[in-house]
Image 1 (cartoon, helix red, strand yellow):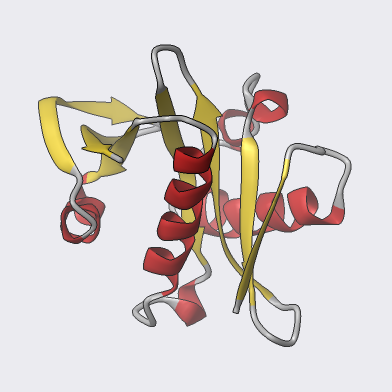
Image 2 (cartoon, rainbow, N blue to C red):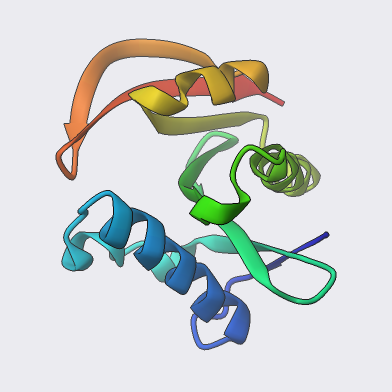
Length: 144
């Protein structure tokens, strides 16, 4: 397995990330396509996890915020590769990158079904449940 990242929205890495996001969020979860690609794409660092055979299996993006904070967004693993620990690999790589860049806090909006996944990675929920793209979420954060 290898995780690579890019800010180049014209790169093959970015296109792999968008393909995974479309399959998971638009195809599986019914998120409107116009909500999936947003105004933050060019500001984000896009990560893709590849198999040794160069098959894209998962993605996540990081959106830099102010005051040493960065936000995890668009975390997705293709259905056939879930429950194999790939999400943990991807998140840890993104966290390592963020830490090396000087960020000290990671925030995210977790779908309610994903809370146990993030809790295992030391994220803690805060605030009220909210809806995004018709799916219930809760904010979570972690200090690096």
